Length: 229
Image 1 (cartoon, helix red, strand yellow):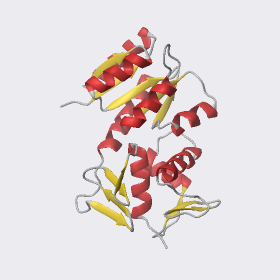
Image 2: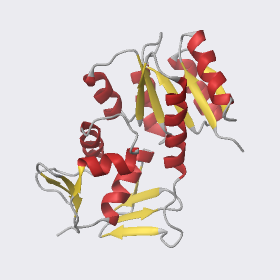
Image 3: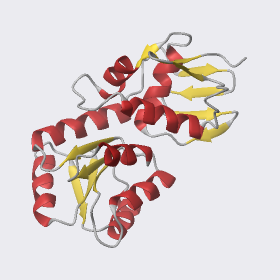
Image 4: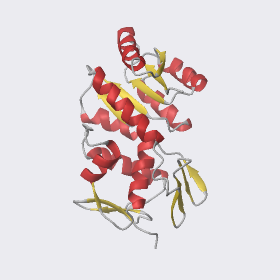
């Protein structure tokens, strides 16, 4: 069954442009024109990915992204007419997985959707099903993480980032390496993206960066995961 994508934008021409290009790839598309409608359709249709405009009436994209992250780890791609780094960082901190700046290339958007769906469905090598550290359990097949037996709600990129670090326990991974592996070599983002996702992971894991339990910063290089001491 083809994946279902929810597209949220108050401009009908943008909705039709995105719908046309996504349906050409045989994806199902449902649409909403404001934030409140987006939440209702999301709960009813259970889409596999959300493309979300920031500037909308009634409830903007920031608010919708925040609400969706409280109930789901579905991939979210933000559409923004702004190019300021602060807006991109804000979206990432709220739980967005990627962003595309208007005006955008339909081919680029399709490529980012395909990459996000691929990452969300990635299950790791067939020979490896569960990765563990003391107190931390990553179930690759079920795409679930528990910390001290409590489930964690992670976005697909947060999951992939944590899994990559844990698989390379004790090894320092540079920001460039993390960006290339988790986001893809053709991702047009900055290494700051990695820092934002590390910060979100630490918040969800209740980690104090000055006294980390798992994720350690190697200043000027990147990050590594160690067994708790």
